Amino acid sequence: MSDIREFIRAASGTGGKATLAIRGGRLVNVVSEEIYQADVAIYGERIIAVGDISDYIGPETRIVDATGKYLAPGMIDGHLHVECSKMSLTSFAKAVVPLGTTSIVTGLDQIIVVGGPAAAREFLDEAKQTPLKVFWGAPCKTPYTMPRSTVGHYFSPADHQATHHWPECVGIWETVREFIQEEDPDVLAALELAERSRLPVLGCCPMTRGARLNGYQQSGVRADHESYTPEEMLEKLRAGMHVVVRESSISHFLADNLRIVTEMGVKALRRISFCTDDVVASDILKRGHLDNMVRMAIAMGISPMAAIQMATINGADALRIDDKVGSISPGRAADILLVDDLRNFTIETVVAKGEVVARNGKMAIELIPPQRSVALLNSVKVAPLQPGDLKVAYHGAGETADAMAIAVTPEKIFVRTRRDVTLAVKDGQVLADPARDVQYVTVVERYGKTSNRPVAFASGFGLKQGAIASSTAPDDNNIICIGADLEDMRIAINHLIGNHGGQVVVRNGKVEAFLHLPIGGIVSDIEPAEMAALEDQLDDAARALGCPLPWPFMYMFVLQITAIPEYAITDLGVVDCVGLKVISPFSPAGGDERAVAAE
View 1: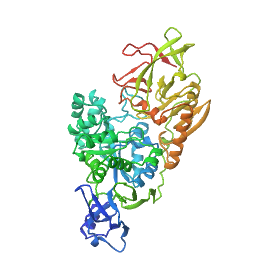
View 2: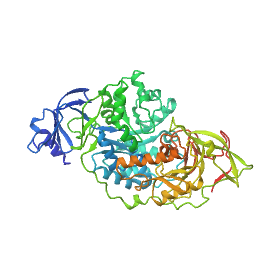
View 3: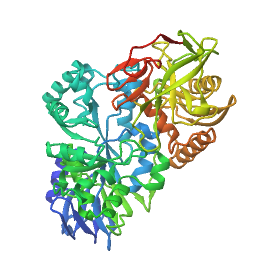
View 4: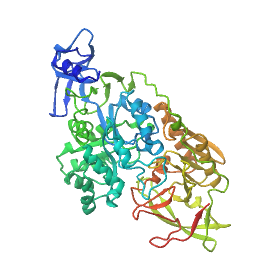
């Protein structure tokens, strides 16, 4: 039912009767900030009437009894890299729709770097067959790395011209501050096209304040999801931005960010919305999704109405999609949650796209994934590594080498600092030192465009033996591997190459745990519960190697992100994320580089 005439006639009382009616509930009106008794009439996928709907009921109308329940709008995740869940859109819908998430905003940037706009189109078409609405932000460019790493597809101004007309396109996604700061010509061209297309600019500017924020805002950015402190978030709010609170599986900012409301006196709650950014199945099944964020906000003292607004209409306003979703209003999508108690916010029934799709935390309909294209199932194109490929050659003198390791801590996943270490040199090769928590780290370019496989050093992962590796690793999804043993690393990497993607743990030459991610090398169609079980197996296997981190694989795969200081590693090598340049792992702090080669 896509003909607007049908909806006009049905809503006007001159056409078809409601296909579904929800009766007896108390409406949470997030627009007027009222709660009152009201019924809802639905025709196809749209709401056609709210209040007294007696005239809309026909003999074929299906009735949902909501007596004693509250009716809240379906929730909207305002910024989500859905592929980082490692679940396909079909599997992801199975995980989050029963929890009340009925819309997500995503750039599909992770599948785009693998297969370009055609791959994104496959995913968007897949979403149409699920209850989950997917709004798409065209990435400002891909990859987001600076300097630019090697990927399968570089999203360009030409791609913007070719995709802005897609019905799912709602803005320019992940407009990284460094691109604006450096006046990247491709990104500036994309912003000019966005202005012509009347698309909002969606930001990414962590730790950006003062003059840097003033300069960044000249891009026209409308909303930002990256505030590391409440003070930073408040400055962005005062500067006119919509601020999006992030609570992901690995970065927990909600409690701190919302201090702008609970401690700092901010009253402009309608400019604050929610997102999860990066979540995995094991976390979703344990804590929930946006429903968890609503409960967390309420527990901090924020009213249920305001918390629900942050998960619904506020995000819709920020993204200019409030005419489609975000409230229970005529003309909007028929995405409605039946909730027993607003403070506990446990969702009993989910109506999405005009159908009852979930009850009591379980899907009420069957979702079948589509057939996948050959291109997405064969996306790892690099040849297997040979013995010796990962040795680190050192051209300095002596039996030791002064080096730097990219250091992480359990407390702050995105903070990657420098740890200066002295490592042994044997037969012209620099050796890691697992006893002092110094492991090898490498990124292997997997698209077959180069032979890049730089090797450097990492600290904080605690591996005493073995290796862990992943082919899903934003922002470029090259294969990243950390290990205490170079041969185990080679075996781990080759296992992923041979299986066209996944995550793996290897010890003493044996695969201890493996998660197959055959779709683009980054996602799978397996059920959320099976995904969660395999995630737990991988993390347990990594901890058996000595890793103390709460999320070993997520801490590893974010090492390729260059948009966050201080250090990263891509297929180009170690990146100084402040200086925006590739450096040698033997570069003294603040000094010149010394010769190094990764063989």
